[in-house]
Image (cartoon, rainbow over all chains, first blue to last red; front, top):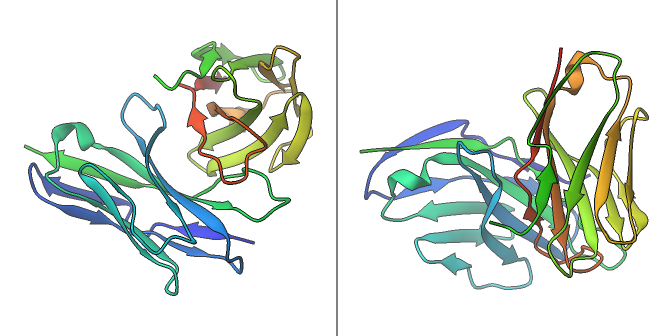
Length: 117
Length: 114
């Protein structure tokens, strides 16, 4: 069974600084997808970024980028130029992409990030 | 705004009762997923429906059931409620059967069982 682990329950960063959130996963599959979702105090789940395992290039969305290390089964999220609005809980999620599989997302435990002024 | 709507936003009820949570997917999306977020279990997948048919089942209790209607909205029914059922229940949707697709989440329904 696939598992997702976020080893940092809480992190903090100063505004305008860079922070990296860690995520590791365990799977025997070769075809899968990885996601980072953000959950601000409003509790809404917001997609931050998505990575296809077959792509070697790391995904980037504005100030958010990932470091995808397939062999190490690591998928970290880097937030550059942190803003107060980035304060939220961040969830790493795994989806098995093979044919016949469903869209079930497996989530990590989450990392609470606080951006300090 | 993800385009996924959920009602009600909050629900307070007593143990032993039954409640129904409602979800409307994004326009054009055929798959609906239900997730439960609790302090004990974190975020867990409950069930997926695709175009009216159940497609995948996760850690969903027998006291819970769901369905997807012809207009593609979905309802999650929780019965014989226990204190431990208190949680945030999310609905998400995606265009097709789910594999390889990004899911967009609704705002959630916060259930409190007293």
